[in-house]
Image (tube, rainbow, N blue to C red):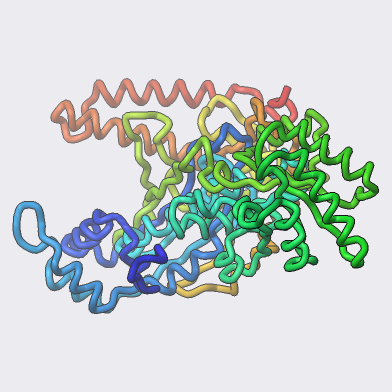
Length: 532
């Protein structure tokens, strides 16, 4: 929580939208306290017009679940809330239920650092409806921003072509929590270090920093400032050389650097934070080389993003590292991922079977996928991802010859000869973690390896290839049939015939039959064929 607030670890359960509580009370009052639900976290479109996203935040889910409870102070606050129409918003019986509440859910999630794609579940939650509903907002808040930021970082790291990226965004981040999340997620996405000292302590990630322009301005001259810093930090010596002008900064850095050489020390690098970075970096490189100091590295900053870095390197700027702040920590130009949490199945009693459910919506792109789902990733002989199939968990061991495109039933993909593995891992069982969370370095390495294996066609910044995501054929049929039934019921209700209007039913049946027929005669397409 914000460092300036009087918050406590248990307050995480209040980090939610009010309607989660009003729905939970409604379930309680409607005798649905024992009903179970299955919910998926997913996003509909990849941020930044990218070809992939990087999953992040999953390593904090188990902590969130295990700390999710309501103490007396929280109950008192909820009891004080008034309904707009008058009276208390919550009943004493419901509040007493919350007083003894703890989450009893099972959660499956994609490992942190894995690459992910639209519509497929990043996280699946199963448990009592009330539990699943109360968890929604906090879970989305944990995963959405960090996935967005890890994706942005991966793009910046790719643009840098192996040169280190340092995350410098804390002062421009969206509050203290935003700064911490940015530091954590940027490390998973490939940043070498962060300037955020608290993030370094909490998450055990590398920190980096030297001095600002104010250091130089605090001394009688620039050379005095450089000399004092070299004396104070001989093993972390980077001079910021653009406080007054870069030319004098280079000259003074060389002078003090030579003094350090005579002491057996070395100037590590210089940083340029303004001006024509391509031109000035070339000027600096030439000067240090001519001075016999080729070991001095050149770092740049100043509102950098992936496109600026790409442009600098295209101009052959001799830059060794990049400090990226504002546009990384704020995920410019896209401030949100748009991840959602949608119910996919319901079980009304302990003895009943799971029933798939779906949201139809007035907008086709908002329609959801029903059923209890997992994701199978298909890879080629080099372990390069070729496509992901969303499949009902009960049919995970079946091996269909093709999958149906997640958005268009008329497109299918041949997957008969591809190896595969499941993406979702069981991380929480009955409200308790199933294992210790993986380290951030391992998540960072997973991200790097996954992107190394991904076809470059999906990684380019301009018009990346669309990665195939499909449905297992029987799941596609379940979605079609369920959508048809829901539409018939809705149209029947509109006609006042209790969901059985013959004209509407006839029209839908014909439409569904035609749609299925068209899909069945569409030739299968391999990923390679789709690329062409």
